[in-house]
Length: 136
Image (cartoon, rainbow, N blue to C red):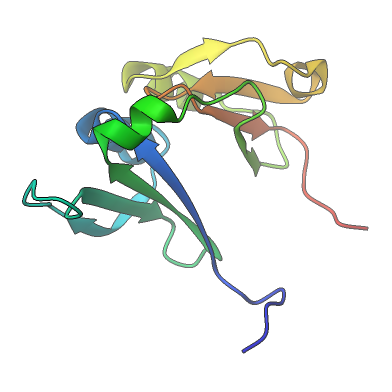
């Protein structure tokens, strides 16, 4: 199958604390746990969590590899943007904060105008955009 619009996308990221990342992405944002692997701690056998919505064409893979996470420092443009197409619910932002997120000003003022930016426990940024997605 060629790469096209029906291809599923996996966004993989290292995490310093898988439990904290799990709380933020599943408890805070409401993603489902699609797969979980508890590593043995031996070389190459890392714990990981795949989270997403079952019918979405993407999912997030969080890999518990402290050495890799220490080398990977997220920048201000390491964004995962979710287009809501409606105002960002205050309850959702509060839930993300209660689950380890920190609301931060966006590096690009566009995202402050059209959404809310929340930093996850590893420093990656989630933007909840009030805009809808249109590729036209």
